[in-house]
Length: 248
Image (cartoon, rainbow, N blue to C red; front, side, top):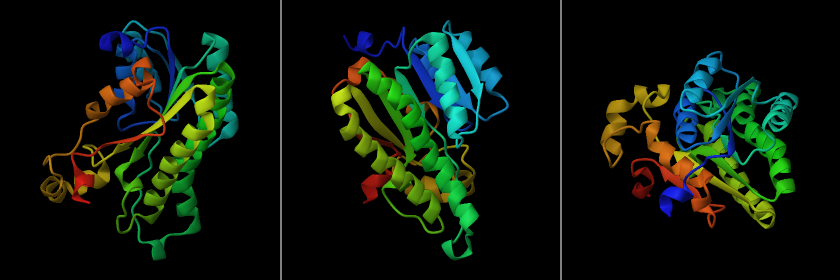
C-alpha cells in the first residue's frame, strides 16, 4: 500500500527554482514517475531536462524569471496546454543573503523578499488557480529553518522565509475545501551553501547530527508530500535540519 501511495506515475510536477537542491528534487520526482515541468532562470536547465528524460518520463523546460508574474503565468499556461494538468507544484527558490540591517539598502531588502517570498506568491497564485478549478493538487514550499528562528545579520532572509511559512499555512486553510494540500519543508544548513560552507566547522559542532545536510536528504519527504500517501496532510511544516530546532 505504501509503495503504491508514493507512485507519481501519470502526474505532472512543476518545479520552480535553480541550483542547490533543485536538481535532486527534479530527479527524485521523476524517479517516482512524475513528468517534470522545469521552470528556472538557470542556463543549465536543458542538461537537467535531459537527465529527467533518461529516467523514462517527460520533461519540459521553461526559462523564466522567478519574480515576473507574466513569465510564470506563461509557463503554467504552456504546461497545461501541452500536458493538460499540473498536480504538483514545488517552490524551491532560495537567495541566501547575510548583511547587518543598518548596512542594508532598500534595494537589497526588496531583492531578497522578491526572490524568496514574492516568487512563491506568484507561483502559488498561477498554479493554484488551476488546482482549485480541478479540485485537487499538492503544493510544497521549500523554506528554511530560519523561518522559525532568528540569525544575526540575516533579517531579510529570516523575514522572507517566515513569510513563506505563514503563506503556506494560510493557503492550506484557504484551499482545503478545494482539495489542494499546501505544506512546507524547512531546510537546515546544507552542503554547498556558501554561508554553510564558510561556517562548516562551527556548524558541525552545533548541529546535533554533526554534519551538514545533503540535497538528497529532502527528496523522500518531498516525494511523499507530492503523493497520494499524504492525503491527510496540509498546513504542515517539516524541518530537515539535523536536529537544530531541538536546541530550542
